[in-house]
Image 1 (cartoon, rainbow, N blue to C red):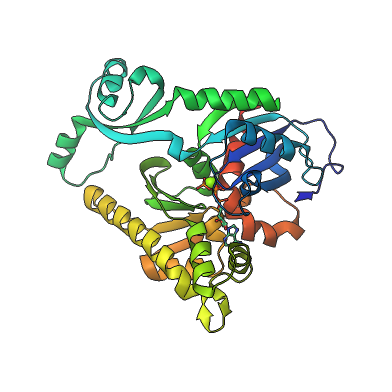
Image 2: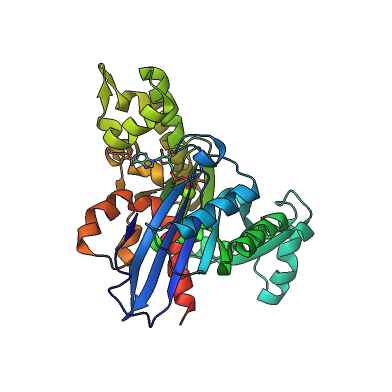
Length: 368
Ligand SMILES: Nc1ncnc2c1ncn2[C@@H]1O[C@H](COP(=O)(O)OP(=O)(O)OP(=O)(O)O)[C@@H](O)[C@H]1O
Ligand SMILES: [Mg+2]
């Protein structure tokens, strides 16, 4: 896509790479630290559909060799000009299992023993087959009703995160075969939170619209509270445009990306056609918001849209009408320094790179 500053800065500081292997495309973002800032060096995207005879924009389930081939292609791509292998890689939410469980308020040491036992109830495979991680969700200190506070103090909410060992083995194979110098794998939610969120105190919902699925995360005070997946995404919209307008999937994808919800062909508005998918996704999201509000008695006061699907022109307004609350397009590049001439393109295509930017930011932090 762009190779702006490789000659501009001297080579003394280290560059790092954030890698996001999505179901429809791979994204990479290369950053470098200078004077306490994260500087954008280059970024790019490679569609995976064509690796199995499918169009750009379609989600595919590629065998490991094809993913390795695609990453190697991208690392060699002259136009993107990635110059480092120092990296981190995001793991798809779908390859993880997360749940919030309630535990008695016992000392940390004891908790470390009982959490894995309790986690067995939520993890559908033997616990020995997964890498298990967990953390305590901080409790509300200032509940008005003291009796409620007493009650809640006896229980802890613990977020458990499990990743199957086979998934980790696959990612290790990927780094071996691509000669990447990768220091961590991170579930994509945490990467997105790092690049997207500022200091929001009130609960916010992140909506990551990919090709065939949409991920919903509720985050409060920087802590992940709830996560869901909806089995519809932006490629469903392409399919509907193609069917309703009687055009090829490729043409429908082009129309969607060029005109977005403002497009219209022979009197048929893309907005109407897309509303099947958008209404479905947004109503699922509203259910999640309502359930959260009911459980915790707190409003979700902001919705942040990310993922390629959120680059759809006009989507923010439709979402605002649906949620009746503040809706913004996520701007992951706002935490990095980039040349002014890229400002608009980064704002438009930015939401797609939320995961990759977040991974790169973490890798950069590790250098210190
Ligand atoms: N400018 C655009 N306007 C509308 N839709 C777009 C635009 N750019 C990309 N998309 C759509 O975004 C989708 C891909 O989004 P994204 O790259 O976030 O998915 P992914 O990360 O590969 O998928 P997942 O995270 O679900 O595995 C595709 O369906 C594509 O058509
Ligand atoms: Mg994605």
